[in-house]
Amino acid sequence: MFGRFMNNYYYGKSGKGDYRKDDLPRTRWQLFFEMLRVRLAGLFRLNLITAAAWLPALYVLMQLISNLFNVAGVVQTVQADPAAATPEQLELVNNLTAVYHSVILRSLVLLLPCVAITGPFQAGMAYVTRNWARDEHAFVWSDFKDAFRSNWKQSLLISFITGLIPLIIYVGYQFYGELVGRSIAFVIPQMLTAMLGLVWALALVYFYPLLVTYRLGFGALLRNGLLLAIGRLPQTVGARLAMLAPSLIALTVSWFLPAYTIYAMMALAGYYLLLGNALARFVYASLSNAVFDRFINSRMEGVEINRGLAKPEDLDEEGGDGEGAEQD
Image 1: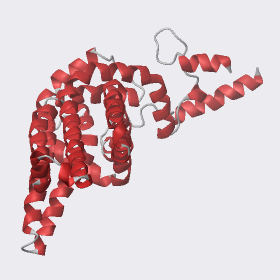
Image 2: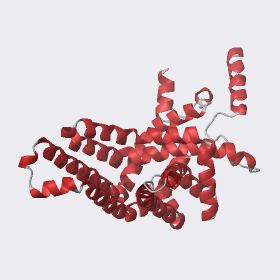
Image 3: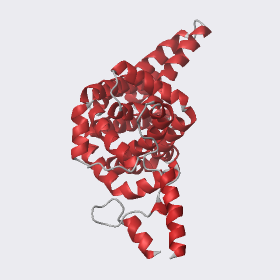
Image 4: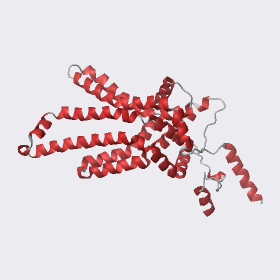
């Protein structure tokens, strides 16, 4: 038992013990959790290498949340004691909708370039985590750097659109929302605008893995990413929600316990600076590997599928080794 523990502990390190055949993962879930255990320290390093790229976006988002809670605090103060409110506070409350609109719109405009610069970093992380998720070697820095250089043009386009999508959704939703008063038919384009953001967010799970795995034109890249997101909708939604859990927890704490907002935001920022982005890319890489095998690799001649999983010949050899051991 101790020998097996040491073999598992040292798995993947040069000159150390390797897996025995009966330790090989046989399902996607076994492969995911085993690779996550083995590569967890590497994910921390990968996240720290790329953390600087997300600092501007993280700052803008934290400022947005802070400003929204500040406005909500002023509203509560005025409602509690209107007579003691200052003229500025009364003006803010009287123009509350316009104030919220201004705060959100300004933040979304600032967020666009902040998100746009993250694309090449996402591509580099996607390449490293793709290899790790299917039990293949990748150097944290050199392989990340190579993927960054090789895919920076298309990845910048993806991240630019990603930064633009929230602005389009917000402006479009507000625009059609105002027109709903004239005709209920405008609810349809309003909902379609919201759906645009949802579909893009789901397709992002596959865009970067597709980019670093296959040679595709930009149009084909977008088309395949969208089709895969729709084709594996429950799994994709589940992966997205799982990776959004820390943010949802922080927002819930901030909403119900305003006094702890600063601590919730600090914990959330620390999570994303230390591990969050790399962990998300690893989860998406694990899902993408399975989806690519199902819909793409299985249809390409000569392409290996189920990398990292135990193969039938491994299991056959395992049985043969067991019979030999009994005979000895």
